[in-house]
Image (cartoon, rainbow, N blue to C red):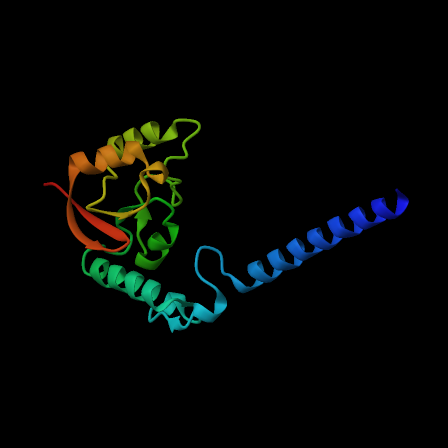
Length: 168
C-alpha cells in the first residue's frame, strides 16, 4: 500500500507539473486578447502605437477605423466606444461621452448603465459618432444598444467595428 501511495502521489505530481509548465509556456507566448508572439508580425503606423505589433488583420482593422474616424472625430470631442474599447479614446484624442472609458458590455451588476446614459443625455454629451465592437449578444450592452439603434444610423462597418452616426 505504501508503494502504491507513493506511485499515485508521484503521478499526480507529474501531471500537475506538466499542466503548470504547459500553462506557463502558453501564457508566455500569447499576448492577452491578441495572438501568439510568432503571429504578431505587423506594425501600426500610428505614432501612439509605435513599437507595438499585432496580427496583420488586427493592424489593418484598427488602422482602417482610425483613418475613417480621423476626418470625423475632432480632438477633445465626445465619442462613445463600446464594449471594451478604451484604446479608441486615446488614439482619437476624444472624450468618453458615457463618463467611463471602459464599458463592460452586458456586465452591469449595479444597473449603472441606465443612470450613466441618462446623465450623458442630460449633460448634453451625446456624441456625433459611436464605435461599436461587434461581439456575441451575451457580451453586448442592451441599454446602450437600445440607445444606439434609436438615435443613430449605421454609417460604416469595418469588421469587427461598426461606426454609427447621430440622426440629426
